[in-house]
Length: 195
Length: 286
Image 1 (cartoon, one colour):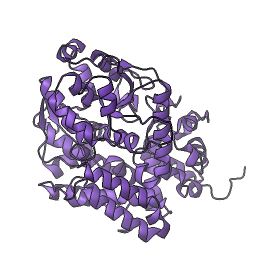
Image 2 (tube, rainbow over the protein chains, first blue to last red; image 1 turned 30 degrees about the vertical axis):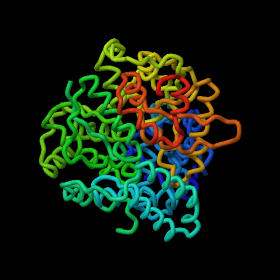
Image 3 (tube, chains in turn purple, blue; image 1 turned 30 degrees about the horizontal axis):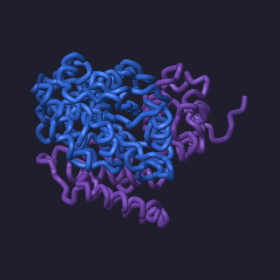
Image 4 (cartoon, each protein chain N blue to C red; image 1 turned 90 degrees about the vertical axis):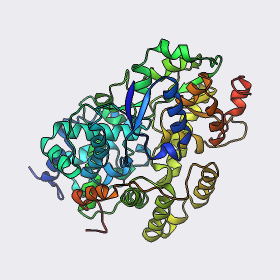
C-alpha cells in the first residue's frame, strides 16, 4: 500500500482529540453539506473537509477558506446520523490553523480578533471602538478590504447611532482585572501577532 | 419567581428594544430579574472561533457570579445562552478545569445556577393560562412567522427544546396573545450572524431568504428571540420595488403590546423597518 504525499495521520487524531468529535464515523452521506447555509461559499464542503481530515490531508484542511466560512449554526451536527458535531471541529481547525501559521480568511479573522481585543479593553463589547479596530485591521491586512462595504456600513452605523443603538462612549466593567487574568491564563493561542 | 439576569452586551445597545421589553414583560409577569453584578461579555462567536479556553472562561465568569445566589441565569441573547451552557458544562464535568477556575475567580461551583434563555423561562415556568390572563389587547388577526434561528435551539442535546427542526414554543406563546402563527419553512435557518460585517453579502442572501419565506407564507411580520437575528433581518432585507418591507419584532415587544404596557410604543421607533404602519392598520396602536 502506498500513502499519498502530504498525508499526516497524526493530524486526524489530534483533531479528534481536541474537538472531542468522532470524525472517523463519517460515511459521507453529506447531510451536513446539504444543510450548511454557507457551503456555497466554501472551497471544500463540510463533508469534503471531514473526508480530508480522515485522509490526513492537513495542509488542504488548515489552509482552506472553508474553516473560516463556518458560522457555527450547528445545523450539520443536529442532522448528522453519526452525531458528529462539526461546529466544534471547525473551531478546532481554526485554532490549529492559526497556531501553525496558515493564512486565515482576513476579514473573518480581523473581526474576531477585534471583538476579543474589545472585551479585553472594556469587559463588554463596545460596538464603535470594536468597529474602528476592525476597519484598521482590514486596512492593514488588505487594502481593498477596508473599502469593502464601507459605504453601506457607514450608512447603517449612522442610522443605528441616530436611533441610539450604537453608543459613543464605552462602559468599562468594575473588575476588569479579572477579565485580563482570564486572557493571561488562556494564553495567546489564536493570536498571530503575539506569537 | 426570582432569577439571576444576564442581559448581554446588546440588550442595552443594538437590541435595546429587546432588553427594555424583556424587563417590562418580566415585571408584568412577576418574574424578578436580579442583574448579575459586574457581568462581562460572553465572547460571542469570536472566542470559540479563536481560543477554546477563553470561550469557556469568559462566560465561566458570569456562571461563577451566579453561583452564590443559586438561581437560574436568564438571558435574552441566544449566543450568551449557548456560551453560558458550554461554560457551565465544562465547570460541571471537568474537575481540573473547575479547580483552576475556582481559584482564579475565587468562587465555589454549586451547579445550581442553570443558564436558560428567556423564551424558555416565559414559556415553561409559567402556565400558558397565566400569560393569557395578562392579555388586555389581543393580537387578533396578526399573522406572525416565528423565527428561532440557530443556537437558541441547537444543538438539541444541549438546549433541549421541543423540536430542533420545527419548534413550536414561540408559536404557542404567540397564539396565547391572540396572534396567528403561520406554518413556514425557515424557522431554524441561520441569518448569517457575525458575517454581517466580514461578509455582508452572505447575510443579505441568508436573511433575504428568511424574509422572502415569511412573505411567501403570508406573514405580516417576523417574530424573533435574538438580537443578532433582529439586526440582520431588520437591516439586511434587500429592498426591491413592489416587495413589502417586513417588520421584525421581538417576542417580548408583542407580549408587551398585548399586555398593554405603555413603554413598548416608543420602542417601535428604534426599528429600521418601521412596524408602526402595520400595527396601526391592525388597530394595535393609535
